[in-house]
Image 1 (tube, one colour):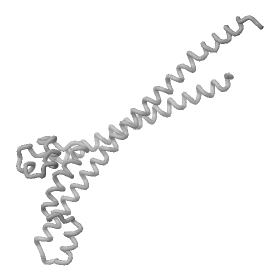
Image 2: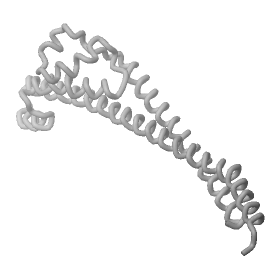
Image 3: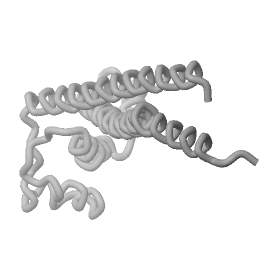
Length: 191
């Protein structure tokens, strides 16, 4: 290998280490920022999971009760908890409030019957509940993005370390091997 090609390889390795390390740093920052932001915003809402023995949890279907029980009495402070609260607590109560109908279905009925105040109240309940549910699911989505960013940052860190080790090999070990090969070749008797 010529020295020109060797220096090109070393230069490429330096660029790759800097690039991969920079991307890993950005991934760690993104993961930390996003999960911290989701945490802080959810905590500011002061939503608490009901205690495990509360009627609010006891009245849920078995699968929903089990999902909620794991966070019983805890504050809603991360994406996973937001998803559980949205899909296993709010969604259940919204289905009960409207007899299984969606906001769109109830809203259409309310528009067809504008004097039905009970139906209008149900529509408002569904609207508010679905809005909160959607906001919580959005927090869950961003919490998931933070987790993916963390895993990507870890992968980029591993790649940066691997390229850095290859760079160290190229700078410190490879020249000694080449020099040893040249000495052995020079010392060999001619045929």
